[in-house]
Image (cartoon, rainbow, N blue to C red; front, side):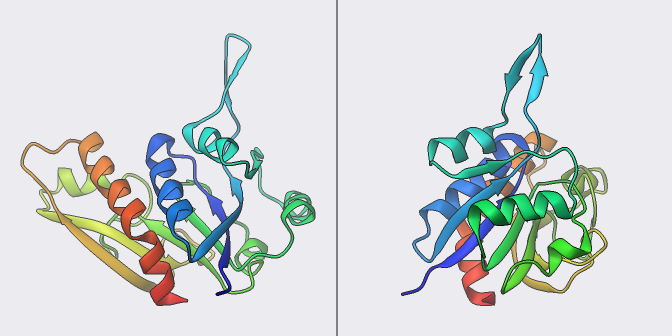
Length: 188
């Protein structure tokens, strides 16, 4: 069985790391590299985010550019070669159009709302503020604008009255870690 190769992009603390961990456990996929935000520098000490820590523990190539441009893309390609899927989960940066056609099969984003509701930043906060009783995760094809690509898979959760921003994101990213492999496999 040929495994699908993935360049994973995420930086939303332990939340994105949950999705990466789920993908690493799925035998249908091989993560060939990880793109995340640069480590925070606090009192002259570098503090990588949980995504970078997990990726380094797994021996994966890690890239932490400040900006995304073709020279960074070329550097990554030199190190990891070709890959099938570019997957973002809590990365927070709009990828240049040249990056969206870079993978051989698809550029996908796992968005943490039940699209088409709450595109863009802060989807859990909006769901809570507007009194939603459900929300979810949506796997979409990436497009040049945030969260406007074709929806390819979705999974919903119930919201509780005592849910907070933190509990909702915990539920959503936990669900993402559990089902990302299946969502991608159905699409690919």
